[in-house]
Length: 355
Image (cartoon, rainbow, N blue to C red; front, top):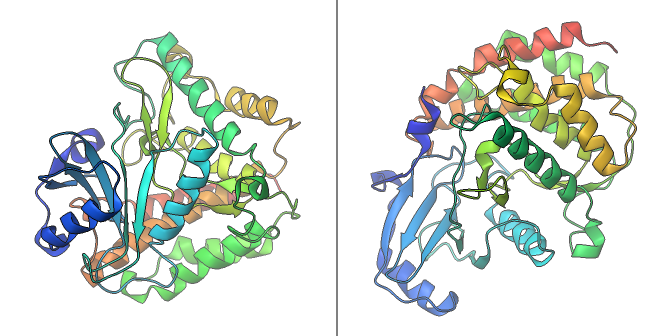
């Protein structure tokens, strides 16, 4: 799948995800400062979980994120949490879109939603940053590294997010959560490698470090808006999986790009990184550690296996939504086909892990 073509731009709103546009217009008039219609609505091509819409007016463009209609798994699609964390981080100057209002009244468009600014810039869908020269690639990687280090520098309590999640036992809870989601999503079926990973992860848990920071949960290049000209992260998007947790696990998830092939997944494995101007995995980890005052990440191998498993569990959930008929993306079926190779990759990492 050509991820750039498949995810870039908008399309007509799919029949299943349409809603009462007049009701939304009335809500916008009452809740979004400076709003002035008329309103034109389209649906972004990208996004697998929470349907996302572009709202165009003569004077401004906005983005609407909503909980999908239909049957959903408990605790998933928490647009209220996305709104809360973006509001708190935006007040600290962290690069997120400005949020306007949250609507939890399902009578308006059928499910809860929030509205935020449309941030100008570009989204890069491939981790090798095609089309840039060596210096520009290096600068963009440094910007991504600096941005996640800045996120992990916040004291959650000091920015009003002290109760955004539990402080300790993050990795153990996450292993339990994603194992449970995988095992209970019966419509998506079972996978032999995933079954092995559930057992392996439970038996090899690292010691809990007790460090709790705001973590993104899905930090990768295509969940950011970069400046159109400069190596600058203008906004970090898609906070559905954010919580309080282990920042090292969050960073290792970001580092999966180094282990992913540049085919089915957006990754760097097998590419000539020096020729491209991209830092090695070791250099990238060292830069993050310098920025956050760490001497290293001792549980890196375990956290890599866990995050590969977690991503596979997320894709397993996409497969389940396909089976239930409420997958929001037009290319969800293509994404779901990545489950088996990703689960196999995760198990291969487990077998090689130095624990």
